[in-house]
Amino acid sequence: MNSLWFEIPGTIFGLICVWLTVRQHIWCWPTGLVSVVLYVVVFYEAKLYSDLVLQVVYIFMQLYGWYHWLYGGAERTELPMTTQPAVQTLGWWIFALTGSALWGYGMATYTDAAAPYWDAFIAVASLVAQWLMAHKKLESWWFWIAVDCVAVGVYASKKLYVTTGLYAVFLVLAISGWLAWRKSWLAAADEPVVV
Image (cartoon, rainbow, N blue to C red; front, side):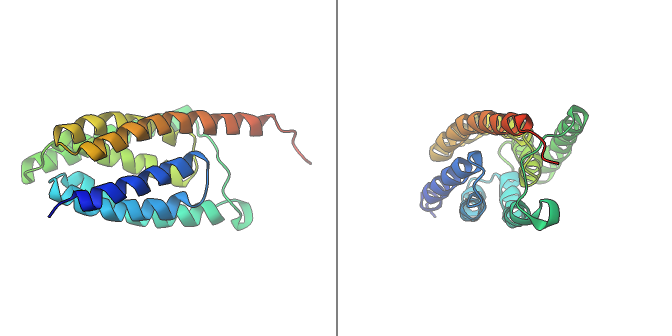
């Protein structure tokens, strides 16, 4: 099967998804859903099993994020973007690195995975990033930046050049997403409190 039939539209929907996410637009979730469904096939064909599992989990995370952004705010209103304490972010990094080591060991031991530890990092750190993104946390972008850096190398090594290009663009979008969300957060912090 030629995975390009899935990789190219998956890439297009993925780009639209991240572009909309940077703008905090609710349609990022349904476009992301289309992208992850297409990438299930791409990663199966490439034997990147951690990424395959990640895409399946993403299907449910896309639905959760979509719902949570719409109704996760006070009194079931739209969820505002917020930050979290540094110690909480550190805890997520420890979780991502420990989970990556354990998942990578399992993939290296029990499968013919192509890049078990790097692929595991992409999967685990992406899950953390996606969870934080679903909760509209500014810090989610730091995880996306790390994932995109690693993914560019892994996908290039597997000759998934369209996906490599996608993740290079994702890296630029993740950096711009962090800057845009930070600007939005700082602007909201400057607003006077209405009593």
